[in-house]
Length: 238
Ligand SMILES: CC(C)(COP(=O)(O)OP(=O)(O)OC[C@H]1O[C@@H](n2cnc3c(N)ncnc32)[C@H](O)[C@@H]1OP(=O)(O)O)[C@@H](O)C(=O)NCCC(=O)NCCS
Image (tube, rainbow, N blue to C red; front, side, top):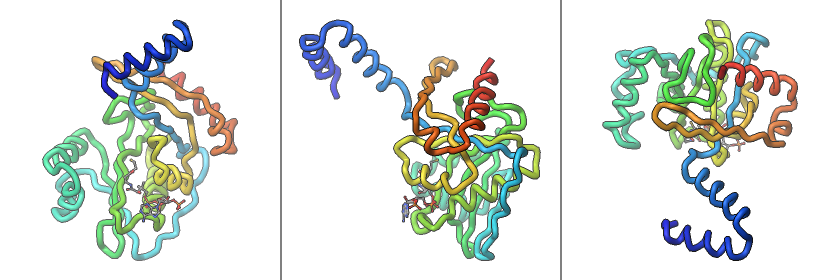
């Protein structure tokens, strides 16, 4: 919507509803325009319970890579060819340089998808600081031919199982509220909903707006654990 159209709509709203309601509506509109998509943030405690072992069909293999040199050329090409290859290559290189791990899932020796993890912090500004042993899971992608077959939950399950035996304490992942495929996929993993939030980063400062909604309780029946985790996450901010 153009700026002038937005102003004329607000003027019409002002005539009908008065000043207070218009200010409220304008603030909402500015917030929507400035803030990123509302994200659902999920967590998984890695040490407080034993995660079920993923029974691996032999055709599936999950592999962790810690350096660009470990990534086969054909896999790098597959990962970068479906969007801006230059930016994608740069992204991958930078992530490895910062210490991120790339997890690949192969089906009958073909690359089916991948996801990233980063420990102790996040590559991009986040909703709260992570503890040293926490792990952030991000940027999961399944190639179209492999979607809808449970590959993503299998990959995430494999990652969580590996991290449980490592130093990780709590894992976090987020998904845009509109991404029903990933939301549905994450329901098949041990991740539980923490809450939903929008964020805005200006001059290195990140502002987070949390939304308390009823769906938290519906999605996660372990609400006590959710509120405890939320408290911990918030106290990490100070
Ligand atoms: C989100 C994504 C990672 C899920 O991977 P996946 O291996 O297909 O996950 P699942 O098999 O658990 O399927 C999840 C949902 O995808 C949808 N789906 C099913 N078949 C599908 C297909 N052929 N194509 C696309 N989506 C399909 C369904 O809604 C399914 O949920 P359901 O099993 O409850 O019906 C994958 O769709 C993807 O890579 N999307 C593009 C990138 C993205 O959105 N990444 C996540 C944000 S970081």
